[in-house]
Amino acid sequence: MLVSLAILGLASAAFVVRRPLMMSAPRCMAGRWHGCFDTFNGVLLMTLVGLPLAALVVWALARRRRAAGVPSAWWMSLAEVGMVYGTVPLVWLTMMPGPGAGIVPGRVSLVPLRDLVTMGPVGIGGNLLIFAALGFFAPMRFAVLASVPRILALGAGCSVLVETAQYVLRLDRVSSVDDVLVNAAGAVLAGLASRHWWRTMAEVASDQPRPAPAPAR
Image 1 (cartoon, rainbow, N blue to C red):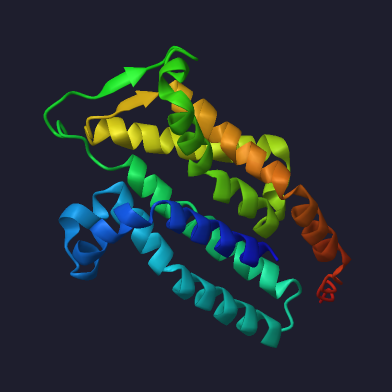
Image 2 (image 1 turned 180 degrees about the vertical axis):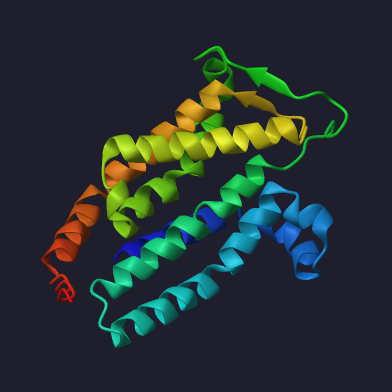
């Protein structure tokens, strides 16, 4: 059901932006960097094109785990692929250099909520989504992350790394504390949305028999 909803959501998004995507398609299909991998439309198009491959990877991992008798093989495989496939394209977009990259000095904004009012609905929504897949799937895969404070720390930590990279690489972007706050909030909200599943997986893992300790010699 989760995979079906994800496919339906991506298909709806593709329908809404189908015209810009088709404009990027020739350059992407020709393997050209400029106009494909350095544009929002191009990255979105390649993300949609790669969706069947991601589904194939989930199937292959789940099949291998089921053959080995691993419990929750499908959930574990989906979580692994989902948190990577749902995060990398969005991080890629945030790391795209601006027109003054390498020339304009790095800029930092450390005053909370100052930049939030200038982001607008699209900016806030985009920042909420950057680490949403990570917050949604990571606690399903790693029981140690199955708590709201740890998901918050994960989202904030990853966001700090991205903002630091933007500053160090001089990408002509503003490294803002508000980006970190909104990114972390998006991870937490997504984690809360998947709370039922990561709780269930934690219970399944706890029910598995533990190996007996080796006898003392």
